[in-house]
Length: 113
Length: 115
Image (cartoon, rainbow over all chains, first blue to last red; front, side, top):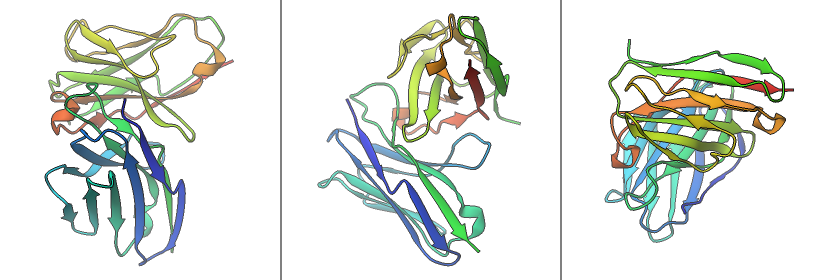
């Protein structure tokens, strides 16, 4: 089955700096890659996603890039703000695989004011 | 307000005492799922349901049961809880199969401690 590895497990940046979180996946048939943000005491919430037919997608300060050849995808957050502090999860799924998303282990991002 | 609700939010129980965690969504979603979240392991799927009366095992189904008698509800049942089921549990729902680019909406979580 699908295996998703996520790095780093913790990331601390200064306010205004950029943050990058990387994930690799194992199933070459994977075609959907969402990112979820989990704030303290809450459930995860979708922030951005990308399909396999697209190499990059942006939404204001966040962007996701996908390299299908290398089987990895990354989340980029620019001009970080304290409210970006949270746990971020990447996920992957393949329409030919199990009817579910496979999540990475999570990255705790701390933005220092 | 569109949401997924879970109850209880916090629960401390003892080994072997049957418990049920309820989950309800008001978005008429077909797909519902239960996850457990443990440090360093991310979110692991326990069970999912594609629609009423259709359920299937996820990655870690041992020790859990589910039912889907109504579209809006998807309770998680622990018949004989054990300490290794101490975890943070999330219910989630999506309009359809999440693989087909459908956003999953998560509940607020249930923190379960089994002594």
